[in-house]
Length: 517
Image (spheres, rainbow, N blue to C red):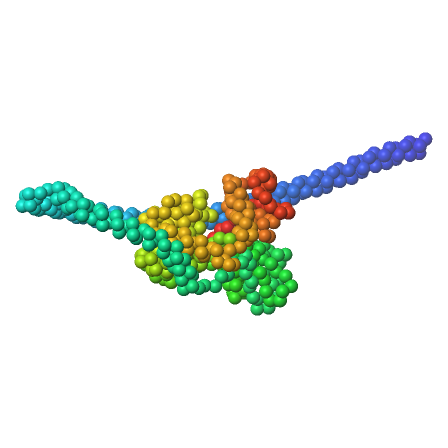
């Protein structure tokens, strides 16, 4: 029994010892885990602190960099503002100088004007004194002769009239009879002799010009990539370029001789220069247009020199030169005018008239044709306005107004101009009716295109089978461009007569351009 109790006691002690031991082990493990947890928490705090410091440093660096960039931009803006202020100051200084110069000029002009007014008053007073002296002299002469000026004149005229009436009547009657017998024969002789003494080649104007090329490779360069060069040349100059299989030759076609000549010189200049591209084409074209004005003035001066005409206004000389690029029924207007001037001079010499005045009237009789495509009205009306503007002699004005019998002829020279105009036009081969009708049709096409609002230029192309209308992009948008094309088509169909069909092409081009300085 005791042994059983010891066994039970031992068992209880073993259980209690096991429980205590287990509790002790669990307590030791809990203590270790708490220490580890505290250690991890402490390490996490340290890591968080470290990351916080690193983040603050990064933010400070970024803030510093941003501050530097901002300060740099501010400095640049300040420098730019300062430069603008300097430029404005310079401009203000230059404007002040100009203003000062203008004020000085104004003062000098006012002084000159005052001097002129003073001289004018002085001259007027002198004229008044002269008139008074002349009147006093006339009164003293009348007192001495005991006759007034009017009575003396009437008496002398009456006596002369009584004595000469019968003699004049007899003389006039005899001369009239002789003149009737001789006038027709003399007139024929004068005209025939004038025509024999004046001889000139007859050549009608053509609508094409040929240009020789150094080689066939130049054709390809003129055409350009995808035809851009040839399109630019045709658009800028308003002519047709005919490039076919003819070796080393291209043809420029246009009904307007001035436009054709400008295009020919432009292309020849491009060939010599070697640089052929759209911008260069436009540059050469603008330069040739300026040079052509000088050439026109030279042609007018040559015409005046050949006919011996002097004291011609420079602007009128320029208008005379423009006649070289106008035609009438295929006849060159300047050659026709010079021919009329020569014939008028020869016939005036035979009749004892003023030869220089006759030549002047003959040369200027068609001057209105030089700008009849720019100004409304017939060339007779325009020519008469030009003659009045440049204060030409009344005989010249009457010759211009009456050479197509639109006005009464008041002088022999006016009759001579009409005769010479008819002779020049009637020479065999001088004029070509079909060519003139063709040119008028093309001019009508261009005038119809220019009648629309917003149109800059109109060119009749392809012998009148195509019309190209260049519009101003700031005034005409894409929708309005289509409307202009449709309205142009309807105008052509209603107002013109033409063979075949006419293609209407409206071109609207916008260019943006800046200049780096």
